[in-house]
Length: 85
Image 1 (cartoon, helix red, strand yellow):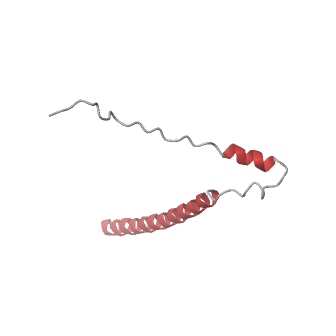
Image 2 (tube, helix red, strand yellow):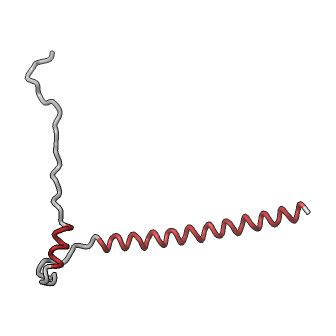
Image 3 (cartoon, rainbow, N blue to C red):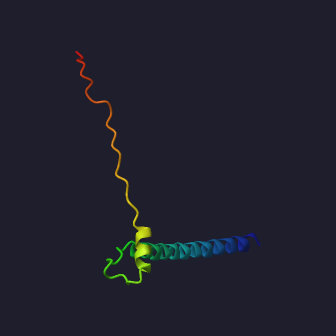
């Protein structure tokens, strides 16, 4: 009876490992698809001359094009002018 139960548990463990492997493969496939979609969304927008002239496309593009603030560089205390010897 215990030997049969051990075989059942071993079989169940094997099935679980196979399911886990399949899920991992599916997860990697989904991750690849999401990366491709994200890459495609980062493709530059068409030029203003290519956008339809109804004005709708220009408003959408203007809303997405936000100015990027320049980095503020703060240098530490420089030369104090005092000699150290």
